[in-house]
Image 1 (cartoon, one colour):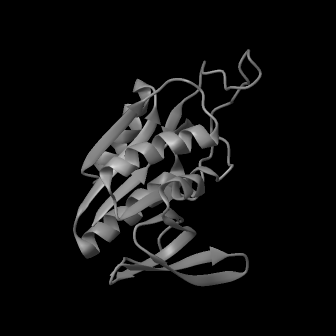
Image 2 (cartoon, one colour; image 1 turned 120 degrees about the vertical axis):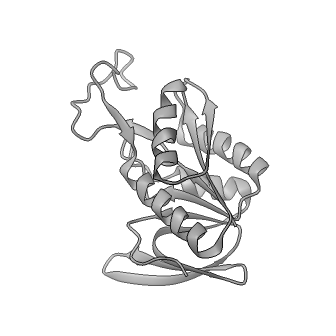
Image 3 (cartoon, one colour; image 1 turned 30 degrees about the horizontal axis):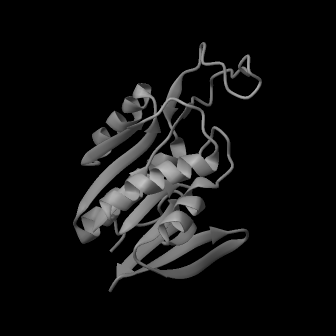
Length: 183
C-alpha cells in the first residue's frame, strides 16, 4: 500500500500574528512555524496503516525551502520519503489542491491522508478539492479505519456521534486523532 501524507507549515498557535502590509497575508516577522497539528494525526494514521498493511509512506508539502523543517519532522516520526514542491507564491485553496493533485497523480497512491484541517486558514477545502481533481473517493474526519479487499471501512466523527462509511481505494482521508490501530 502506498500512502501519501500531505503536510503544511503553519504559524505556531502561541505566535502573535500580524496582518502583512498587503492586507492579505501574514507578516512573517516574529512568527514561529510548526507542523500543522492535525497533520500529525494524519502521519500517525498513515504509519498505523503501513504497520497493518505494509507498503510505503511519503510526506508531501507545497511551499518555500523553509517547509523542509516540517518534512524533517514527518521523517523523524517514521515517514519514509519526503517531497517538497518548491513554491513561495501565495496561493488560494484551489491552486494548492491543483499543485498537490498533480504531484500525487505521479505517485499513484492507494491512500492520500490529510489532517482534518489546517490551522492557518481553517477552510478545510484542500483535501476535498484534491480528491475531486484526482477522481478519488473522499472521507473526512476519520477516527478509525480498516481496509479489506480494496475498500476502506471508515468510522468518522459527526456531530453527536459516529458514522461508518465505505470507500473504494484509492481514497483521500482526513484524519482526527486515531482511536485504535488499523488492522
